[in-house]
Image (cartoon, rainbow, N blue to C red; front, side):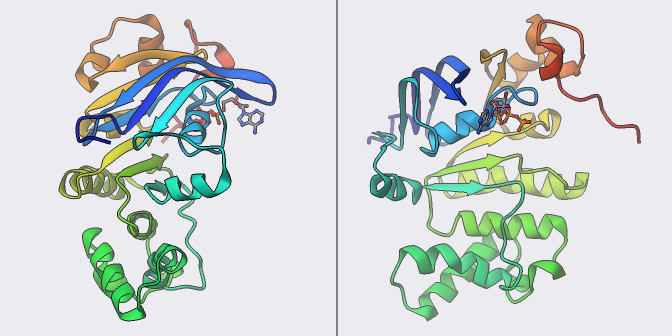
Length: 262
Ligand SMILES: Nc1ncnc2c1ncn2[C@@H]1O[C@H](COP(=O)(O)OP(=O)(O)OP(=O)(O)O)[C@@H](O)[C@H]1O
């Protein structure tokens, strides 16, 4: 893979779940170094698209290339590819009986034969990168929601993956913690030379740090462009999604929920 080749290249992709087409005609290129926001109402297929990138879901048609190779079907090849993809899930997935440092060490222990002292140094570097070196020996229950999310981020970065995937990284976080996580995402992306794909409902928090945005609705990509192009789009589908309106060209049962009363 050359420096110019895209980190992700999706062509004419169709994805099915339970025998039903969820997404079709998906074409997307994610160039190196970018942060791409994947937006869309609940149930539109954002997680399904991520599943195709990580090889959990094979295409019903079309192709998915990640890190310069077609996403493999063979389990061993898939595991190898996944070492290059850091994934931050909304549930964090931290093991509660391990400290922050031990959690971050897990991928290093699973995939390398480095001595303990080297692992400890790498772990402290990753925790430092997310501003939590001092919390190395804390248990998850001793951390705030935002801190726990950052420990999970440090763990996702443990193997220095060139591609980061964030699945709803702001769920459950207050506005301050959300701002910290989004700033970190941008800073880590730029300082570590990463490429990031962020699936989120949090449009207004995410667009300021994104280089590119796509909106998925009604089973396809209905917008692809810069955040400012998105915000000025006159497309009725995009407009309905951004404003969270129940009536419009997005089917009612796929429309985003109304904001909860404060
Ligand atoms: N394992 C599955 N089997 C059958 N249908 C599924 C499966 N997973 C998802 N679906 C369906 O596929 C569609 C897309 O779901 P998906 O989870 O990708 O949407 P999403 O945009 O990520 O939603 P949300 O924002 O609520 O997480 C939905 O209609 C969902 O019901």
